[in-house]
Length: 397
Image (cartoon, rainbow, N blue to C red):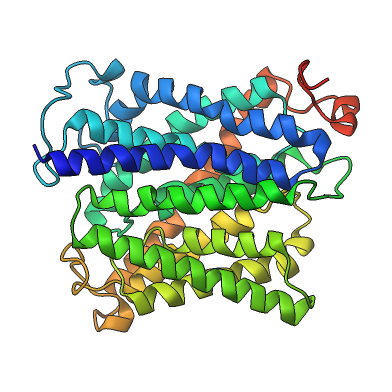
């Protein structure tokens, strides 16, 4: 066992957990004051629900067995696992790796909450997250990281472009479409200080997300920290430049949104690309997401309140495909086929397109089915009165 790597992944796990309350502050600062408490609860309650669900069934479906789509149920409640056994590559205990992956299972459903804030009942949301985790998230973890067919196909996803961001983004879009728009679609950003604090917490936590995915203190982890930083910086500056062109003034919300798009875009590629590749990926993510949010989203008339699809979905799709352009064996020996721009031909690029498309279609279809089933069993939306007034806890009242 490598005690240095153990400490590293323990810290990385804490940082990834730190992202979820950061996201609660980020989303809470973007909504009107009347929706702030509801948004905080809608994000933060997932920390408890997803943690228990991961232990009961999530790890088993994600990492047990070698099925092409999903694991088996042999590790329910993590029985029959030697949690002290050491993983051969990183030399960390299996239990620590399971804990680290649990943090991903917490933050991922929290991401799509931004699409439906202020209009969905908490019981429905809890039931949906349980079904979504079992039917969509855990199978995607298995497909990409747990020995499933996308992993065998050669999909490169260092820290969650397909599993986390495309998945959450498409879920956000589909839920927005099915739940329907808010009664009042005006949106005031009532606490931009919280937006800045939340963004800072997310950026900090993302180092655990990306560098931690190396699972060891090595040159790949260092590369991931560097690429995460430059991609985020490039996206932030690019978004500010676009605001100057189209508005023309720079906004704090836009600056934070640009940084978030850079973090999302680099996630699948972070341990596979050079500094130059990371910068281009970050800038590209900001440009594509900005153009989508400003020009395409209004045409779709889908009320994705806080642009969860516009940021996580669009930048995640770009980052996943761009991995097939910029990945290089020179950075990471795990890259078997270099990206298109590094002389590797079309193979990895086409694999990334295929994995991205499969993730999008699978997520959309399963969310649609799950929603249709649950909406027959549970009321989905708040009453019109509560939606207009805003939901508040008794303490807040």
